Length: 485
Image: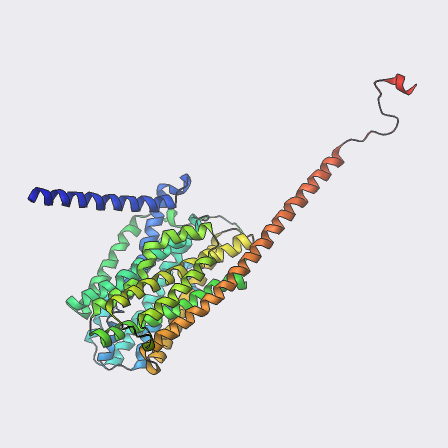
């Protein structure tokens, strides 16, 4: 029996190892094309993914317990709403000025400083337990969240811009890397945060997670600056018109999706506490389910965006999100009771829909500029797309924080989630309109290319005709003169 158990254990170990190797191989193949998979490209890909993961995980570990913790201390609703939205405000402001901020020092130094400050602020977040008075505690929490917002934004903007420029023809899979790192961070952060909080308490949770984040400074220090800096000399970029409705339209869908996601983050711990009793671990698990789909299906969805019209992905995501929000807390007249299993399934479906929406944003914007507007990817365009994406998500988090407080004040739980479902249904209708707009723009772009190529061919043929020498009268040489006698 012992031999059989050892054999089964060895087989399971081999199977898990094989599965891991195949998964890593699939990721590598998704970025394959000889010159792309150089050693430098792989190192940059891994480093940027880890940076995005750290920038997502460290500032988001408190969602399963922080709001409930402040409520138990009798903090005011307005102060909690400001605390929740504060980081998003500074995400928005920092993303707007990120291009000027990054000129203050080399990119490598900027990333090291941002990681150090981000993790240090997380450790200080745990020290709030030593402050007397709930509102004063929230006030210092707001200051710490502001610092985290600035540093996390700079890390993400720089990492995404590096990936877009280094992999210009794989924007869908670059977006998949970004969403995978974000999904992994958003999945693990609330779950680990809730789990650690249940075991060791408020202070130790922030110190442990923040301390682990400091480990990222090591890989940054040993990475050469040349791998991160993309030098293009004195190249002058063509002017890019950012105010293009079809170009910025995916941001509108992303904005509404982020508002709904923030509302769920705000209310989940409170709802679980009222429905099933205080359970920070289960609350963290529910929030993790919302982001788990981004991790599991990101590369498949990214390949889809590179192959087909990415607006299709936004339509599908809006539909799944609408159904998922409705399934989290079904209306009472349906007669379906909320259970932990049902809530988990609805969270997974919602997370898949949200992943589709967020992942289609950057590929859709680049699809419009490259395919429909015939532009080239350069540093300016990649920075603009990354910046606008973060502006949309941070704005949605700001609006969602205050909207969640208002809805929670005046609505029952099922009405709360019904409003979110209706909002996502409106993005579904909007997405169908955008798809047909992009299809028409692409057709016109292809027609213009065909007409241009035909005109070029006609001009070339005309030049060929004009280049033929036509002999003048009297200069024709006749081989058979007898026929003209």
